[in-house]
Length: 378
Image (tube, rainbow, N blue to C red; front, side, top):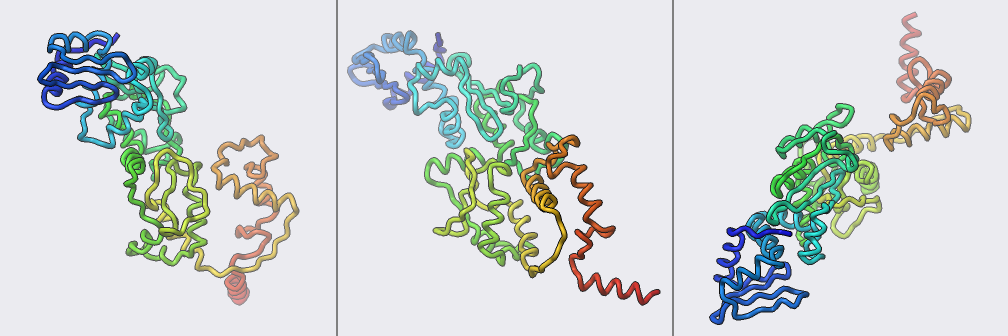
């Protein structure tokens, strides 16, 4: 049973006196003939109530409607539309009537956000509380996790991965686990998520409202200056490779919405993330600069001697590095092409002392000049 505080009821009566209330199935008004009260989907439909009768009706079975109205219209309010939209999403407010939601909130309503799990619960007098943790810790008792209560503590959690390496991309699927924010209000819950995934809630809501401002590749490239202005020279095919390398679920939790240009979509997979990516990020731009320089090189034909298994092994090594699987391959996994001992064996067999595959130099002309100079010295 949800109780109504006097100040909650007073706030509703005061609001109804000024303007009719129609919110989440609750309809209330004050007229010359008295107070009117109705609830969608029920037989509640009263008119001509005195203020005391109006108050009495709202403190019994209809109490959840009052506390729900108070939470959303007074506690949360309309000042932060992105925050409000997300918190209502977290309890599926637009899909279920108040009584159903309150029952679900008592058990906890979960929302996945990147690698994070947010659980909305029902607090005292209809207030909501929020529990935030890593999805990998979903079944772990909170007492076994490091507890935090300040949203800014999430900065440290988001800075390094579980191997202590700096995370330049906050939306990379490498957020550490083992922590929990066990009891947050709505404002702090959203702020925590904003620290973990900057601007993700705002962009998610802008997209829902049809207001997401997308900056495509060509516009991004054209506005670069300094050392990055070179990316404008990257051919369209190269942009496809950039998107394929960087903007997929295994590398980033965002869903790429930017294309090569307005009306010119890329074929590369854009991912399936909950929140959108509205423009090429700084990491993509930095990587594209390197690839633009590399793509300026002319192709050369090299001849190597490899067994079929060795060729396949080189392909497996590239795949394993590209997919981030190298750390998963144990020393005993000798049937894996990227196994460390397999790779060392191949290096011993096929690479010369200068690191050239099959003794073939990358730049044959430079190699010949160096050998000639060495010969002249003797």
